[in-house]
Image (cartoon, rainbow, N blue to C red):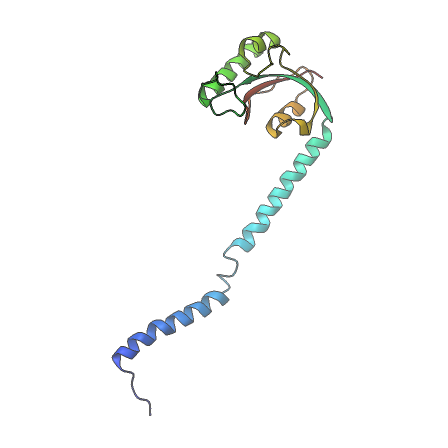
Length: 170
């Protein structure tokens, strides 16, 4: 015959049994295993692989080298900025948009370089970067420059150096 547990022992035994049961159930429950990651991770991996494949195809269809000019509008957070540049990111973006509108309206790219670029030495070179391959420039800049046709001007491109307006020259 079983002796009934004392009320104090019964109170201590219930949480202990619940904990043991919960741990065992938790670790073996099909709903818990993977926590949804087993479904999401392959989907994310497939999307990433598809994006990489699209990028490889785009790069393969482009030339290995291009030549371009650019106008660089820097801001207070720009990498390698001169101390004289104090405008905010928003102000720099607006200024770059202003330059682009003027160029699309017929202004000379070289004239806009002289008036707007913040790139050290950029005015003296008329913004000319010469011939370069994709790995020479930061990715957003290279992606934009290599996507352009000869003579075409990019949209405003943001990099860690500021905002660029790029014209492919060859």
